[in-house]
Image 1 (tube, chains in turn blue, red):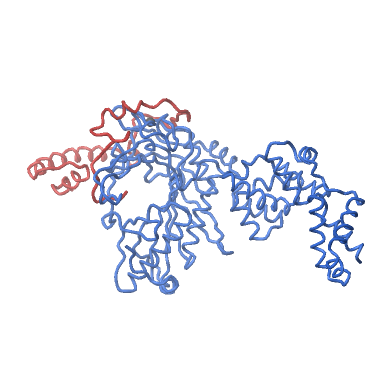
Image 2 (cartoon, protein in one colour):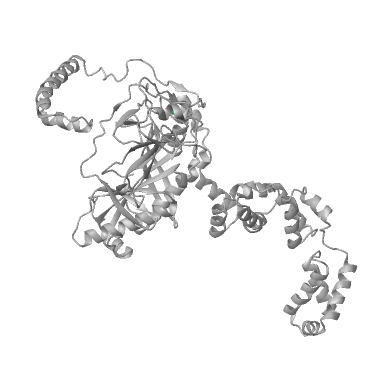
Length: 496
Length: 98
Ligand SMILES: [Zn+2]
């Protein structure tokens, strides 16, 4: 199934890739784009439809104002200009995923256009220019049935569910992205990742790639190094994870390079990404499609008042990359520490823990080790754990005050997670405070020295690292309720 | 620029309407008359008159983002030629991707 591939480094030595990315974002409005049916994933097939989204004769669509608001906020966050007047258009095509035989979309009057974002990849900044962000409706979902392989070519028939038909989408299209060289697949991945974070912080989409609420079509072409005329491109669809964006583009660059370097030519076509790691050709795009776009007569134009646009601009959140830079500087994290915190989705909880009084490093330690493990075991997000950032800060305060050590602190966390109350409640109820009574500790140290005379002799001889064995014995004797630092001090005093 | 039979055949293809040679020969001149009539309206309208796409002088007709009841599935599927697993069953589609 796999085509001939040229080694990636060889491909990049000979050719410059040009990227183009089209990302579809499914908006998380309560209702659909043009009717009041629920916009919800996973409903029983064909239970979220009505005359409008089924395209029944005589039905009339009305635009969901919230979807327009989300589209404008997305456009503003991408530094786009917002159209002062724009229309919807009918994109005519015949396919059973749309009962109307057209998709309501926007054609030459997108609601947002001419924007940009800056992406940082490996310390290098790439300016990505946004050509447009336009509104459209999603199509229904087809399942190909019968046949042996489940592939459409073998299917005997298709089954259609129209629950998704008419749900609101914003399609974000870049201008051709040049100058990324060997970083092209990484830049593409970083771009989609940026959009995902941005949509989350705007609160306009669930952006679950596995559920299709964020979808990427990745265009790439190659031109001989130093050339300025773009080559023929392919458009790879079905790229449903960040990792797939990078893999699919790496594959296409290698495949196209193999074709070109052996004197062949690239077919301008749609290709389908397979998670096994290759693409296969779909529809040929040699003949430009003719969708016979025309203005949608059933929907009046959208002319967002400037005051509304400015008011929406005021609702934009701090951009995710800006926030990250701010937090990293404030917390003094290394790049790796910051990356771990981002990947764990821990920025919010760490920020709240720090503002509750913990140091950034202690907040990071608790959330990314102990609590990350608990969340992982329970299969929930950090924020869903039954412990608040303020309680985590309190646990750390107990450690700092010497009331508990790290080991006891973990038991305190157990108690809080088990619903036994605040950290202080758990310490009191479980009797977890370390023994700070030097008399009891001193007696335990004496007992440990007596029980381990050979270890004691080595410490007397200056082999201080042997103290660990005695500290362990004392901690065991005290059932963990001792401050290991204080125990060490006592041992060294007695044997010094 | 007269509309040719080939133009009409292409439009028929796009609209999934199969036309015989005889129909093409008859329809092309008829459609051409309609287009020429519309073209005359364009001549009369000055450059300062934008093409009309909507009869009503309205903009920004929005609906609240509120869920309203959908149709019962039985009613939806009642009009389908074939049904399986609560879905519309349609012939397989050739030469298209998913
Ligand atoms: Zn509906």
